[in-house]
Length: 159
Image 1 (tube, rainbow, N blue to C red):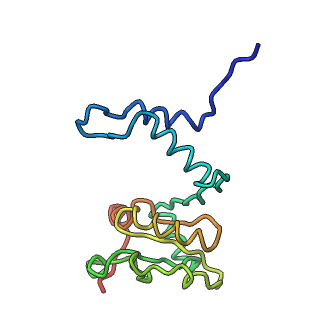
Image 2: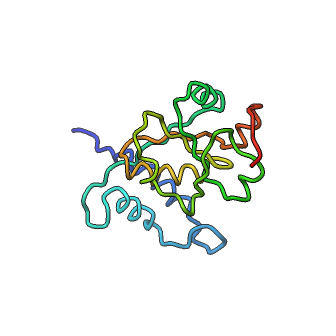
């Protein structure tokens, strides 16, 4: 007799369900099992059809990005706000704030790779998801954003 095993995909959802606070003291007030239904819906879509996996982000270190900039092989896109850019940005970067981010403008094939960055990496990940929808390819971004860039002693220019 073979032993029945649950798919590994359910394990994180079960852990989330186990962490739910059903007493109303913060945490989730959703009924136990809601997370399982949500996880199943996310994996299959609302219509029950299987969905494709998210396109992965490729994290670059400040040193890796600096090397690619020197080689002239990248188009660096800053997705922060105008106020943040005024405080300094990576030399040669283009500014396209997240609220006006248009992946179609980045698809021009000039042979350079696109690398996104923001302050810490969160917004560049969101912009990367939009870009990946258009290209169907993994998207590169500066892990840790300009904070990591500056911490690594890389140059910043004021605009």
